[in-house]
Length: 576
Image (cartoon, rainbow, N blue to C red; front, side, top):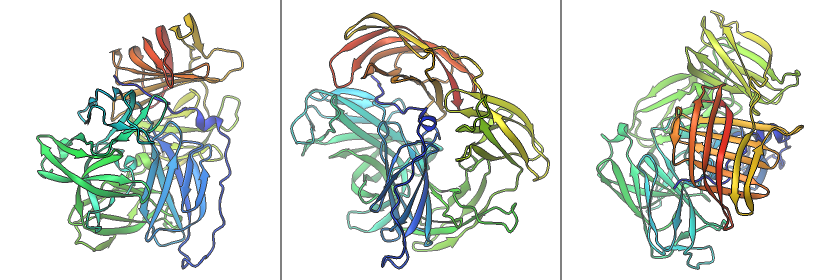
């Protein structure tokens, strides 16, 4: 049974005040001037900025502000690499390891994934746990221990994540970021991945669990269809070492048809990868449409299976597998609507190539998002042509946005805030590069969203009706985010200290038996044991998603089981 634990508060970007970075002063300190200023952005897996995430690099630390941005001055590279650690409650922690460009600045984009409990397990009995698309984890009976080494035989909350190389976001989700690795003989390599599985296990009290010494687990990795022709018969297993930010070779997996199967002796993130000697790609991103063709800082460059960000001088550098053709691209969805692609021929081990890449020219659409009263507001815009999403852009600290449109086309520009407000307008794009200033774009709620309601029984409740939202003076957030890769929609409703989240594997209206509910009510958190969700309306971005729900949920860190009936919800779908 799939369940979700501690989902992200989707309204955090609005309600968190901008926080000043806890910066340590930079300056030469005997490191030959190699210290850098690190600028970055933290987003969730739907691309929404994450406020209040903890950032650490070298001995410095800070938190992200309301727009998910951070800055650290005086960071020392480790050799030729920079290592950044990011964490926040409700998410899997993330480490980014990337090659320093050699200048005095660096940029990084960090994607945090929700920490979702996908299964529960009786530790004494063990079992095999399978994700919807075939990845699986086998846990032996009586094989789990708590941090103090004592055997644990109770209920286990398991968060299992499969990272699929076919996922368009694979390069921004992978731990480490650059696929740097160390073989058993301590030689350094770069990996080409056929897939990853992350296993995170806790007791019902939240204590971390691990395999007992001498016990092993069997992992099964589906091989993506596009890689099956090249997938070897055997392949090394690698686990991710968070301290160093690199992958460590640790065993062998064997191909069995369309999957790899391997045995591991502990849990972290495991990877089935082909090790390659490395070559180097470096260059800069230019904007030839601007006077002097300036180099672009903060551009996101995807090179093969990794994504790097340009520094303040517009430069990037990345190690890639030698002997493989590599596609380098500027993904429009990561670069405010502008994209470009270059092919890089296979390079010899130890070789290097300089490959600059330029954004295409295009009209700039600029403006400022405000609420209905004209107050600057945190939000984002998405641009569509004939129903196809071309790109999105978030507001800056002044609530302004910048996105690039296709010449001579008429597009639909949708603007959203983080509390369910939206607006849209049709914009005729100039046929040249002159651009268009749209001024203030007011974002108002198109519909007065109805509160979520349900009845709860058991655990101290007696068929009590609960309503989330609808109280005078209380801000009510009701948002739905659809993941185009997993085909899941996460519907979150928040009012005061009450929160209800439903995760449904759906892309249309229908009835879904294995849905996931998480609820925070009167200071307690509950997760579903069984939950049926019926979606009666599955709107497009900017439209409503409506439905009903019922089932049973259990108190986290407690024993109470409650029944939920007559549940009703509606949310505004804000990103697709």
